[in-house]
Length: 447
Length: 173
Image (tube, rainbow over all chains, first blue to last red; front, side):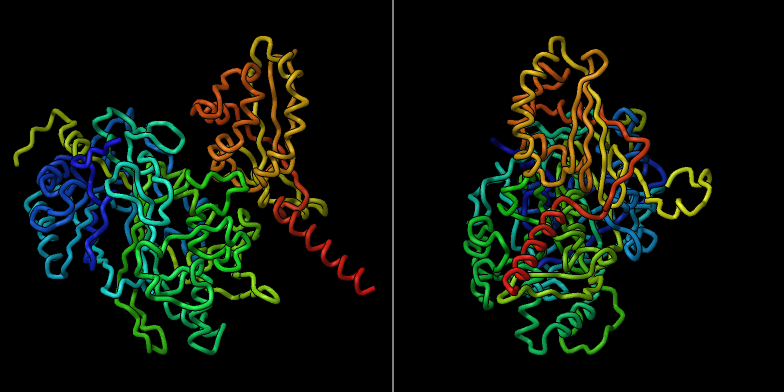
């Protein structure tokens, strides 16, 4: 099985440069002619999976669309109504199902969504901070002199050299191996996942070819990305750890139990009693574990810990859940400055994480994981208990893990993260993008 | 709750449960409990097959539903002169979200029973089967459940806990 690498936008298959300095540029469209001209100018710069290693002008640029954006570009209802319901409605409208209520409600979001002016998005990536500005200037140059398209939001993100996110965890350790992506799977990546879970036009884990609406040229090699902007309350997180233990080692242990990995990235499954930072950096070892035979009850990796919820591996083998239908390809990047380690109070500066989850079926993948595994506990017989790190805390605010002689039960977990943006976007293949630009024969654009 | 303006408050209505529609698909919802009514057409000759295969389907029901882990009860019957089939299910949580899992994971149970009985059932590996379920699904008008916040998993846990407490009390005695 071969993937058409030169037609697939690179972010689907390729890891980002490390360290990494990126920006999300969000555009609002008032006139479709202007939007098409912008896309036409950007087209040569879009980085595919084939040229990821040697991108033009050292820029990695990918382009996405919200449902509202595609509507404004003039796609007809025959195509628009064939999109998945989740994409059509947009993430803000899905708030009840996704648990974005209360303090997470879309009324508090500061990143636009499809209903508030996010029509087209550019992801720009560079491996040096100075280079990022040059890359962004490509976006500005493309926009020059175009009426009817407005750059509304720029959000800088990145992964700092220590590879940690704001709570101090090393991020980006585990990802599925996609059939046809090239290379060989690392230990612990398991059976390659069918490409149709992440790309339209290929067979998925149900044995069907994942399809999009309209002509095949439009959707083939495209996919959907669920974008989430989560504000992190770092001081609340640190204070919670301190409330659980007086010693630094004890706090590290609690942080590890909540995540399922030590903050170094070392998995509890392989080193349950002490951190082993060397193991964390060993790509052939840091994912080489499963749960069913070794730790079904969660004595090492708690069943309610973050990594075991969002990627249960083989833990749910005895249940009706087919975990292979709910795999997402996740890319996280931090925004905002790190809170200094010795800070004694919150500095009031906004910081958090932008998570991009690539999935060919947003309902069966991202939305399933968010609604069933992050914001509920019934699948692991834990009632309404939610993810200790990412879950909503208005319906349950406790976390439990088995220990000897008795279980450890912690209460009073705060909302360590708050949703501050979210949208389902469509990332077309290169031919799809070209089709989208040329779809309206009435418009012969001057470049 | 719908049509609140049509309710005359009295000493009985203060026990009213908050009934909503499932946030993501057919069926009503009270707390964690959902319900589903599912209609289908019976194939010609399907009624005989239904009766022939039913004992095996019934005998395996507890095994499969335990694996599903969220179903409180499940009923099926033929009506309209054996031309139509009706399923009634109450379960925990969301329905549509799990359709693909249930159909692919319990395929043996379904595929040994439904072909030739349920018109349009194309086998568990055929995406049309998920569509058949969604197309035939209806939402009840009335829904009441006892203990809407207790799931099948919660009941399992409570039983275990209750037994452990009783064993401890017996031991102390």
